[in-house]
Length: 338
Length: 294
Image (cartoon, rainbow over all chains, first blue to last red; front, side):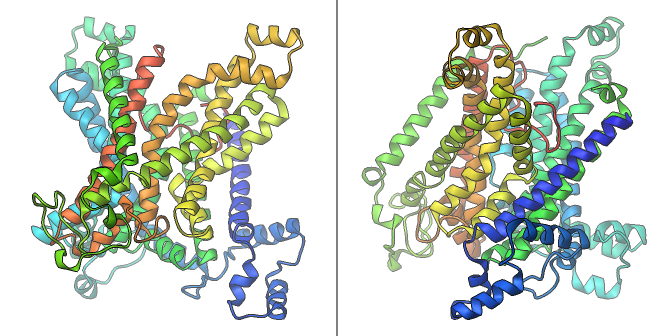
């Protein structure tokens, strides 16, 4: 178990280092001459040389990478060209909002996907199954930005059921100031018993979270359906049937249990995917998060910011995978033996 | 109880393939099919702004008076065309890397696979976004960014298959006969990898279309006045609530083509790979930092 954990942590660190190098390549090597971009179009050759020396671009490449890695480790992720603030500060201020959105989507994915998969497996190849599978195919194929626009138009603009944009009502915040604990507005509001604010944040979260959930629901449904169908054929499950357990218990308790492991694994994958999917959703609901930041930065080619977002999301993704693997190893003793 | 095998899969595959061919034909014959081929380019019509769908304009017109139907059909030439190009180039590069890694094993394998791990540690849309931001704006930059994003998936896939085939008797026999590495890889190892590769590639076309249209939506892909579905949805954003048709039809087109590729992948798997019992579709396949071939 311990050696397995050590190996996984070491490997993750290696991949994380690789991602730092990759982002370095994207920032410094792909765009041609970053010094020219930094100095502006009207700069002469002398000016460019000065900038090059200032940015350390005249040093040998390994030394540049070393300097960059050192900066990343020290928390110096560069200054955003657009906001003129340290990139890491910008990112950490917005991250909790995005995490709140993604985790809400993942939660909906589990709450809807697992029962839907069970229903499909219970009535395999009959109409409930067909309905669920069609839904899963559509959920996996729908462009999220388009779904977001449709939901916004229908539920917010036309029917007025939910707010059109934003992440809370400023008037509510003014009346009920929020204490920052985790940084996630909904969690903080609930933890401090700030109910008006919690309600406002919740209202603003419903539509974006439902859109983000489309993909998790589709993937988890398919996974659970296929897994439960496979497991139903195994002897230990048939045994429970022979013992006279009701079908509901056979499915939800015995056939589902071996499938929690793959579902957990898939959650880490979906987390990474949804994190980036949420970028598109945030752009539409004017939801303050990493997405709007990334889109705005990409629009003006604000390299430190783009690279910062890429690095942060990749590190989160690696961490989520590591966490899932360690969790599995802790829950399932067989894992450590591999 | 593996009841997932049904004879309909043959029909399903035939239907999917048929629709695919039809769409390809429509893309090629677009100028002949649509009423307003000029609307796919710079032409606008200020007398026909934001008209609702009618017998003349099947899908209505946009804010520049362009026929949405014509632009949706022309859109087949950007999104799906980019996706086919991206997937085929990624398959070629990924297969080469994966074959070499799986066949030779050892430190070659180790280096190449750690490299793919790094690429796979960044979610596809984000890596493509970062690359598209630094590459020249437009369809070409977008295609390159996506191809650079997608090759590691195939490298990983082919590597796993190649490694298992490389240990088999017939490959050992080839080695004993003194055949060259290149020849063994191409003639005796590669064929064993084609089935999963084909299944994955047809599923991925939809994935690439989704990411490509997302980037175009953010302004990092196709540029106006190109008829691109993602860009069309973005252009419709300001009047979506009042003129639903402008953005709804391009979005439906994206969803339709993505679903088609998804179903084709499933049908191909059922048809070509009788061992598999669980259709998983567009599922993330492996996670960064895991050593086991997944």
